[in-house]
Length: 605
Image (tube, rainbow, N blue to C red; front, side, top):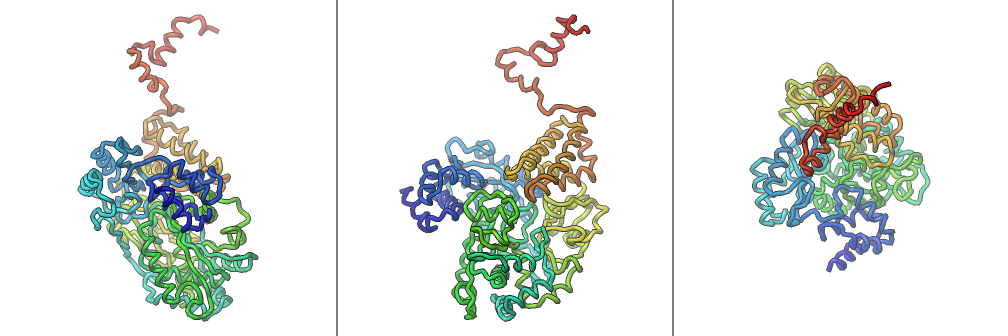
């Protein structure tokens, strides 16, 4: 029966290896895990070496090649979830289910572990139950969840209100209050023609909203002018930055604007195919988005001969599988092609050699929605909003110590203080402006402006009041990057792991100034030598916290001199228990002293 189901899934995907990530996900849904026999069957079905299939399966956090239970529970472990008590809730669930975190229960029923940020920071603490999102966890929900799991109630039959996800839109501006009908922006773009449309995008000075801020007109023109058998548009909906959830809201409630934007990009660059790379944590949106794409095809707003104007463009949705690195555009393309999501060596760049080696433009969800707005309103109108170097508005995901977490749309140029006031922040000591991968501002910097020329941001604003320990914030960030590094390059692979170990060493009362100096050295090394943006940004917030909140680190220093993080004498405690010895000679330091006493002549010069 299993072989027949696998064959059905393979056939539905045309036995195409580039769809391997989707195949693995669907097979795992059926079988519960990816066994060696299953991986071999998939490899044979798509005609790839088994080692290549296994490499992809092992790369992504949401695939598992060992049984992890009928119920897979993953607590979001972003710093904002920790601030809301996720660790106590996780310990409670593990206690009620009689299991250890990260391990399947002895009866094979359930496993409980952590995952990176799930994009629910405005309504946490949150978790994924069999990869379905549950928000606003409470001790009462944890009690009932344990009961449902023991009774083997399917996740789909759990209380429906647990799965409710709110938009929490707190401030609207020109994008979130656009008032356009589905397809209106696309019709405006078709009226302008490709050249006219590109001219409006250029006049708007629209820059990418994913964080890098690259000029959209330059990217689109470079892709249009590149030779290729086909051109592609990719919507990067893999927002994995801790504290970010703006794209979730756009996909949930403004999906037509995003699709219009993709169609407009396709029209501008001469593409007929697009992909939405949807992060695995947003799996709950998949069916709804697929349904809306089908409705647009029926309405003549997608597919062949759109609006009867001879323009053909269609879209597929590919679901990710838990890999932060796939937010990097070349890693995303690798994942779309069925491979581990490791960044490519560049150049060449995706605009000339992207998906399947063809010219490809990769744009953020918010960027595409804004492009649709520009197609209607025009570039000059858009350019009049914001600042000369940062035109238009920016969506900000605000979470942490605020009264009103959620989405705020402000024109570029707004101060950090204005954002904090709107969100109801009080007694704030620090703000991270780009999740774990950007600057951390102290209170004397809140007059700075959200803009590419001052405080650039992909949209993640996490707020920490004076009750928070910034050391623990830094430690959470360090472990996040150590987990999410793809391992491609040595500076990032080793550097992120070293930072996490050093912060753990301080937390365990073995720290010294030497360890703080080592973290500064890691920052300089990784900034200059890392292969991609992950390694280059992984230490920015950590460096800022060391500089601006030094007392939080200094009070954990145990010795002014170097102190090893590994206690060899403590490690020998089990051997002492086994041999029934605890005399001075059984301890490493005392034994060395005893040896020195027995042979005093050896100590003489």
